[in-house]
Structures are given as C-alpha cells and as structure tokens.
Image (cartoon, rainbow, N blue to C red; front, side, top):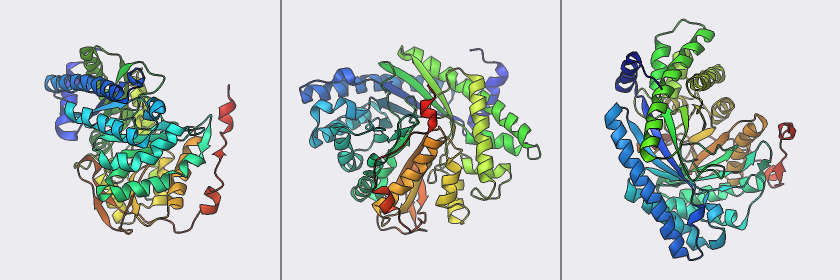
Length: 452
C-alpha cells in the first residue's frame, strides 16, 4: 500500500485535533487444541497460549504507536467460544475457574479485554451452553476483563426464543452481584454475529477462522464531524460522498498499521473494521455527527434517515479503501458511551422506542443502555427479542447490551467510568409480553434462508 505525503499530514491532523485512533487491535486465538482431560493441564495450556500471544501483541502495538504516532486505544484478545471447549468439563466450578484463568492471563499480559466467553445457540442449547449461561452472573461479577456473548439467531436458523427467555433472569442476577450492575456491560446477545468482530463485548474467534489472526477496529466520529461541519449547505448526495472519501482515508491508515502489526507478529492479517464508535471524550460523539447533519437533537424525527445515510457512506468508504473490510463496520449508537446520546435522553429527545428504530439502520443494535432494576425479567427478554427480530428479518447483525440497575428509577444517572461512560436510566413500557414469550420455540427463519 502506497501512502502519499499529503495523506500523512492529513492523518496527523485527524489524530491531533479530531480524536482519530485505532480503537482496538484484537488478536483471535484458537483454544480447541488446548483441551486436556486433566483440567489443571487444560487451564495451564489456555493460560500459556493466551499470555504468550498477548504479550507479543502489547509489545508490538506499542512499537507501532511510537513509529506512526497513531494511538492504539485497546489491546484485546478473542478466543474460541468457551462453551465449545468446556464440553468435557461441564461443571459450574470449572467454568468459573476457566474464566478466572482467562482474566489472569489477560491482566498479566496487559490486555484490556478478553472476549469469547460465550456460545453459539441459534438453533438449540447443549448442556455446556446452558451451564455457561447459568454461571455468567458469577463470571461477569468476579472477573474484570472477561467479556461474554451469545449468538441466539441467524437468517438460516431463525431466533431461538428459548435461549432469549433465559437472559432476563441472568442479567438481573449479574446486576445484583456486580458493582453498579457493571457486569452486564460485559455481556452482549447477538443475531448474525460476525466471527471477525474486533469490538467488545461481542468479539470471539470463530470456528471458521485459522489458529490465530489479527483484526483491527478503527474509529473516527470526530473526523467525520469535522468534514460535516465544513459542508453545512450541501445536499445529501454530496454529503454522502464527502463522508465516504473521509472514511476511505481513515481505513487506509488503519489497514497500514494492521498489516504491519500482523507482519511483526508473524501471523495472518484478518480484517479492518471501520466503525464510528463513540467515547465520552469531547468531540468523539456519533450523536454530534447526526446533529451536525441538521438534526436539532438525535431522536428527533429525521434521525433514522440521518443514521442510514451515515451508515451507508461509512460502509462504502471502507469497501473502496480495502478488500479486507469486515466485522461490523458502520455506526455504533451506545447510549452511555456518547455524550450526545446521554444529553438527548436527558432532554427527552430520545426514548427506548426511537432508539430501537435507529437500530434498524445502524451496525449493531441497542447498546449500553440502562433500565430500572425492577423491570420484570420477561420484559427484558421481550426488549431483547424485539431488537433481534429486526436483525433476522432485515438480514443484518443486531445485538443488545442492556443494564438493569438495581434500585434505580427512570431519570437516574449511573456512572460506570472509563470507556463505559455514564448511563441515564431509560423509561420502559410497563405493559407485558409475558404470555407471548412463554410460548418459547423459534421464530422461523425468513425466506432468505432458502435462497440456496
């Protein structure tokens, strides 16, 4: 890849003034060949595999940060879904021990998060899958870095409502057991989960991947907002083109760093995920980008069109720049991690219903939002099921990261700190879908499942 001097200067400006960064370098690691009938040996194999590779990732990422001056905000690991490797050790205490082993390996190596403590249950649950869900309240409350996911549906399998119906109770237990319900922030439930997603909490090393691979996640909402601010009067066609060209430049810079890091580690380069992912830092808000389009406050009528425009331009810009674009690539709209989203909720511009509508066109779904702790578990299941149905019917990835905060009512604020930010507790429709959800079974796959 040839980078011009002009691009170097432009990228430097983006870093210095517009919060451009490599949001994450995520090393995917296969753990299937670590399995041993002796659980102590199994744990040691896992620790050694994770720690050895993680240390190299951290060291080489720092070298590249110094070389190019591009911040790498997070160094992360994703692993084979844990329910698959624990089938011959299906005991609750062993699941917890494995989580603590992963947590220790990540901490010792200087890794920020380790993802993959999860399961693929889109068509049914094994004994190991059920055990994993049962232990998640303890795992998520007793570890700092371990993140968990469930994939409960796909376009060819439909939506596994029996799995969804286990989650409300699990999340409420997790919230009770963890400080400020923060354990729930480390769990995400998907449909159509991508196997090469570098972002947490949903990253895992897919069964279709090789032994080890490096995936890069880039973020630059501040960069996009800057070019939108400079083009206040152009029409939507021109605005889309401007954003697309900007994302093209960001993607090229990110892939350059990713490929060089993979070469330094002597491992395959996987994908670059270009996603506008907010942080609580000033100027790093996706909501502010939408408002720069001309929306008074995100959540106002017109917001869904604006998010759709942004998503389309980001995806096209990434695809133009690289043949290795993957993961989620698009626009995240987490509530607690975005100052503009927080402000919109507090001012009444954005409620849960409109947030759900926005997820029909964003790249993930209902992300990092808090609800009152006394919301019934069946209602939590229904919130999750509604969002995931959008993904099934619209042939896209959708996900939910919901935080029921004990003792908090709608309108309260919950401070998580760091990247997780501050969540305004959102009001939830009080009417119930309990009798509908208790039917269980699966939402049948749409007709796209028969396209073969």
